[in-house]
Structure formats: structure tokens, C-alpha cells
Image (cartoon, rainbow, N blue to C red; front, top):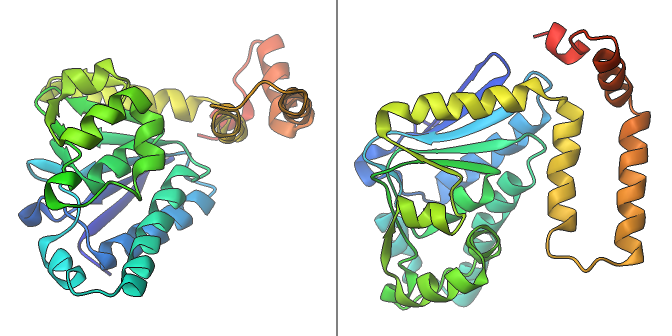
Amino acid sequence: MSTDIRIDVYSHVATVTLSRPEVRNAFNDAVIARLSETFVQLGERADVRAIVLAAEGPAFCAGADLNWMRRMADYSREENLQDAAQLAFMLRTLYECPKPTVARIQGDVYAGGMGLVAACDVAVSVDTAHYCLSEVKLGLIPATISPYVIRAMGPRAAHRWFLTAERFGAAEALRMGFVHEVVPAEQLDDQVGEIVRALTAASPGAVRSAKRLVQDVAGRDITRLLIDRTVEGIADIRASDEGKEGVQSFLQKRKPAWLQSS
């Protein structure tokens, strides 16, 4: 098993830790494949209700590994297409994972690492972290990560940070909505833990459906078709076993079954 990534599961929470501190947790094709496999597997596990994406060392993720970049420098266009498709698949797997995901950002985030953060549902950052979309400095563009990063920071902010490759701090990341919370390092685990407890206290089926709801509705025109889909969505969840159990437990003033089994 690869030592580049650690996976720990405890009390319904899986922690996926990037463990390449010597290269600032930069990823290569092997790490990307391992992350894809991990997110698929954890998404299918009934005992996992939330996933924390963490990292070791001073940086959260510095993007692409330099040795991998050296290999890519001689790739043909077809080889670049295949290579980029692997990264795109990994990011989509993380974004569409049926379990809620929380990025625990203990250090700097650069380039492709921005895609990892943006693909997570919730992001908590230390106040000393810096962020950068550095691609244009290398004559490149943040294409593969752009669907997730633009959704996270908004198109107006993306115009600046994509084009200038400037670094910005955690306070700016919070202001634009790229991260949800900024805390001192000593409070990072407590803040992540608070969010994870909220996620695991909720109905697993409802959390899964609520995540899909945001992805389906965000940015869409409010058409009759969209309204009909939301009507079907609430009808389906009300008729589900967890939906019925949740309402009954509330009315009966008792814990729902998904908490009783914890």
C-alpha cells in the first residue's frame, strides 16, 4: 500500500491524509490514482458518514510534483490529454463523493491543491496559510481545476487570481468564500471536529441528498423544470425510511435511529 496517503476511519469519520511533506504534498499520477480509488471506496462505505482531507508538514498541497512536471514537459498532446483526464476524474470523484467532505488546511495551498480544497464541501484554514493559482507564471492555465475553483471563489475573484498568479492570505480566502472558517493553528482540529460532529449528527441519506441538491440547483435558472425537480426531491426524501424516522423522532422527542446506532 502506498505511504503517500494515509487513511484512518474512526467513529464514522474517515481521515485521508496527504503524507508527502518532503515535496509539500505535491501530487503525481500515482497519488492522483490513489486518491481517486480512495474517494470511490470511502463513498461506498456504509460506516463512513464524513471524510476529512488533511495533510502533513508545512504545506497542504503545492500542486504538481516537480518530477512529474519534468516528465510531462516532453508529453505529446495526446499524452497530456490522458494525463489531465486522470486529474479531472479525481477531482470529480471528490466533488461528487456521496459523503460530505471537509478540507483541513494546515498550510499553504498552490495550483492543483486549490482544486482539492474547492472540490470539498467545507474548508477550514489556519490563519497563516497562503493560497496561489500560480499556473500563468509557468505559461499554463488552471484549466482542470477551474470548474471547482470558480464555483468556490466566484468568477469575479477568479478573474484576478487566475490572471495575476498573486499569493493571497487566509483572510482573503475567507472574504471571497473560498474557505468557510479561518482559525489559529491550535484551534484547527477543534473547528474541524465541530463541523464533522454536525455532519455526522444529521441523517446520512439527507446529507447525501442535500449535497446533490446544491450541485443540481446552484447557478441554474429558476425554471418550471427545476421547480418540479425540487418538488420531487422533497417528496422522495419525505417518503424515505430516514425521512419518516427523522420526523417521527422529532415529534416523539427521541434520538433518530442513525444516532442510536452510533
